[in-house]
Length: 470
Image: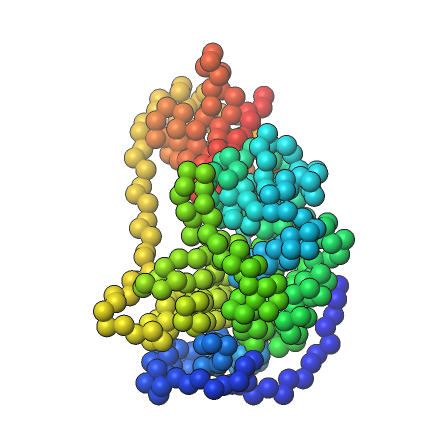
């Protein structure tokens, strides 16, 4: 484990990366300040906000607390996890290696990770970057193993999952499904190609050249960082509890930094000083499927239109940490938010700030759409003798995990590593539904009608097969 010497920071609260020549109007500042009224009340977890334009700082400020126990304020210099905002930095690393000639984006990932199974289809490096690989999502898959929020997750688990997989969600390059597994494999590819530990390579090739002196990758469980924030989540009774980042996930997340360093990273997206403008253009080019359909995901960034303006953006979450990076390239306006409480709606705050910065009386700014809850499945009644045919033991090869289906007079129960039996709701013959992580369950039969297993489709996992064993 690496230990970081405690550093003394002389920067004041509003210290910035760039010269503060551009200014916001008093009215704009007041409107932005009003968004953080709750954090100003005291006793609340906090966040840091950075707003830049044309490479100049408009505003940097901290609100609330980085640590409730010790009443430490959340400042721009506070170090916190940026979650999946890290994905764009991982993509940048891969593009640098491609520019070096060390790899090609169309390379088969098995060229660098030969222990992965041959699915009969080529998964390219860029498929990992665009979430079009078809690989199973590791967080969804871990739930089938009994993993619960806050349990330890290690980098090696991504390799274990990928190596044990017997199928894909879809043919590579034909669909999009957000996949942390793929980004964890990208970190493995960086290490394999460079023959250097991921953090050491990132520090030498990305962080140090950009002056990101307070940026770290948690590759060892329990690491701590100077000026580090704790992370929190609100309980049902309205109090705060600490929630812990017990992961050592690289590539998909795991980057801790302060706001000035994140501003330095954003400014390189604007200038291309490191890597060049051609690399930035490639990084922000949207994906196109063979069908001609365009995906709003590029390389670690969502590239889309918002209120008539092009926007590059990515959110991040890990434990109680939340973050967002938003950049409007035409206006050269950037908005950065890093928070240490799970209830922080960084996406909404970013859009509210953007509306303050770019007011247009002729433009209606859209609300962030709310996802309607799914309709409850319509249950049917199956006879007891039919239910009895589903009873048995079922095996999930990806995690070497066993489940049991128990037949009762009034239905089926699914037993597994979660400890609590799940009730299976019959939707029809061989079709059932139960709580996440499962969702829809289809029992499978051969031509002779012999039941040989069931498949699960739920969110980031499709057609996951559990084989019936005697």
